Length: 414
Length: 187
Image (tube, rainbow over all chains, first blue to last red; front, side):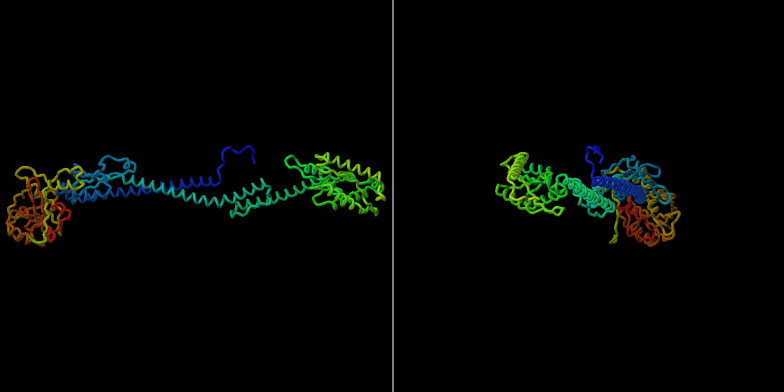
């Protein structure tokens, strides 16, 4: 993605783009066909128009021929009118053989202009002329000018019909474009939505469904393959991260949480101002005579003893209590809420009972570990993790001293 | 007068024009130049009109065998037949012959009969001899057209017109151009 390249204006959607292209196509097609139809129609009508004028002229000449021979103006007028009245005629002129005007006829209310109209000039429509003959003699001439408003009417109605066609086509186009949107845009939107979910919600398990369009399908398949790869990377990265996080907070020898994890747990347990913490207890445990075991039986024996202590600690606390190894032969246990002195004494008793079971050393000997335990109860013995740790440490130390001053009746270690 | 016979009388032009002016949209058009058989002044004023009308009628008549010139026979005392010889207005040429009343040669000698001033019975008798033959009959002095001639000239004060006897025209062997009927329509 090119940073900072996005324009400030909103980009057009596929549908808008398609609609614009369609609109242009439709406009072009309808206007083109409309204009072509109107032009060809106009020339056809012009042709008929001229033929009509010629026909009117011929008919008038036939009708008025005897009237001219008899010199009967009444019959002449009648003959012209009966023919010309019906047929888009603007003016009929009758002249005798010498070119003298015999008469002129125009429809009532019509424009009897003898000059050339604009339409006649543009379309090249000439007045129809017909020589009147009686036998072999030329006795006159008829000149017929057409009423070009017919042609204008045709143009107008043609333009109206074209506009109606345009409107209908645009309507149909909108419907088709909507259908096309469902066919094309919806699959693309699906892909976009999957991509968005993957990015924003890390939903790497989402996949694009088949669309039924070859290009989009091919794109969708590649996209799915890419997603599968991403999912694999993401899973391995997460696992790696989890392992690192676990290693950073746990003692590799015993699998118990280390000091860092204890401090974090304590910090979380004392809570904050918003959420007042419930009471809990911290036990501080120190293996007695561990140094001697190391010296006498070797470091491997020491490690075995530490593992044994960790196992016994784990088995003597409840599920939501947690045990830690702080380093060397020091351990800690956090007893989850809620805690009172009775329960504390109960847990300490269980731990001591558990420690009574000997640990088998690699050398074949067995040693019952012995622990000195100090306890601190939150919030009675301290409000901060540091206070609690110090208090429990002191208690442990006091117990250790007491144990040294009053050794048990029989030594528990060799 | 025979039953079923129709007479089409061309009425006075002025009266007809007035009637048309009231009823016909043509009245809005510029009036046609009046070329309606202007009767010139002078002693011969009807002769010119008669020549034109007779010429026009003959021009629109079709004989089984087209005669050229048209043999025109004048029977009886004709008052306005002075110009009825040679080329006539209408592009027709006639050769004139005067026949005595009661002549029986008309049917073979004439293509057209012009009947002058004769008693009605003689006119009918003469016309009877050419009935069924290709002869056009025109009566000069029979304004009511009771002589059974095909055409009867009507000399008005200002203009010359004619009536015609459709019955006689339809019986005749000469065919008259139907457009001529319009010239005589008087209803």
